[in-house]
Length: 130
Image (tube, rainbow, N blue to C red; front, side, top):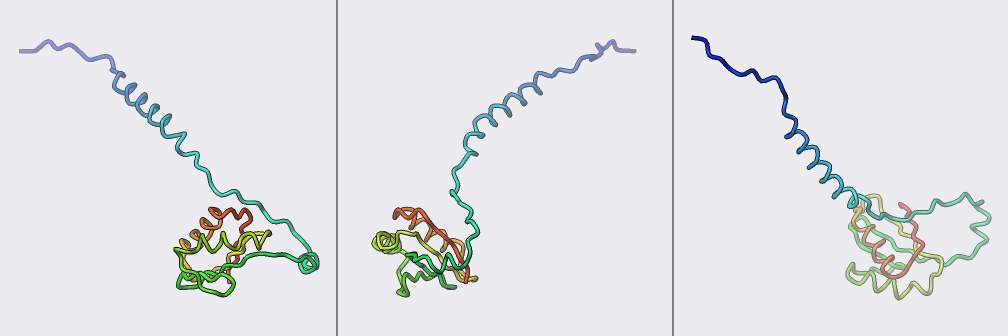
């Protein structure tokens, strides 16, 4: 006995449309969150070495050692007092801050100095590796 079955000739695209609409909504919600603020960096301009040597600059220098210890003007500063030490010295150094890091120091230690300096009101920050 042969059964009489209805043949299925159409594809139902409703579930596919629902999936695309859900993905579109997810992307619309997530897209504004992806626009995060980063660091404002300015690229230094080339200056002749004589001009740099002739100019009297007052730059605060913080050294980050290989074992992630901080040194401000040669004196060790504990990490929990770093921000207060920078803010106390910031008025004496109007030209900004130079962070000298050891090649073996962690990235987190350098970022801690940068955050402390930014919170202390220092706007010009340079990084150098020793």
